[in-house]
Image (cartoon, rainbow, N blue to C red):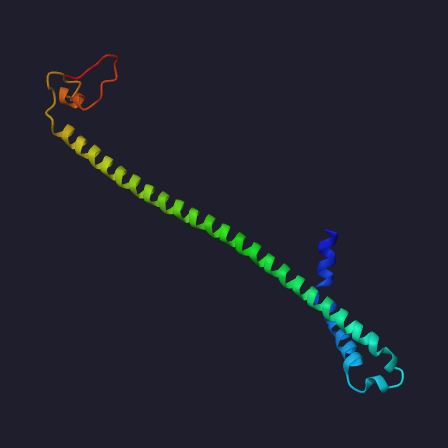
Length: 155
């Protein structure tokens, strides 16, 4: 936690900008020609060179750290995005299968309804009183119904 906070501040734009300004000033003091003969600044030429080298190293290190941190975060976000895309694809696949199953059930329901209507029509066409006035079913109607009694076999 504290380390993340430190690196967030250390690699922020204001800090990198400040180090860049320090590097620029140190480069001018340490490497600009004729500065060593300017009174008051000439004695800082060696220190300016050292500060320029240290500031350049720190700046390159912090920029590299920030770049690698951003790349790692981008890689993590890409992985999360890929996982979400897999989830979305799976959800779409399940939805399409559910739609297909729903359509199949609707088709099967329509076929069943048509068979029921055909059966009702056959029952209406039968003459009343086939030996039993109370029942209009014939033995042929029961041949299509499976016999679930124990030991019942159809020859």
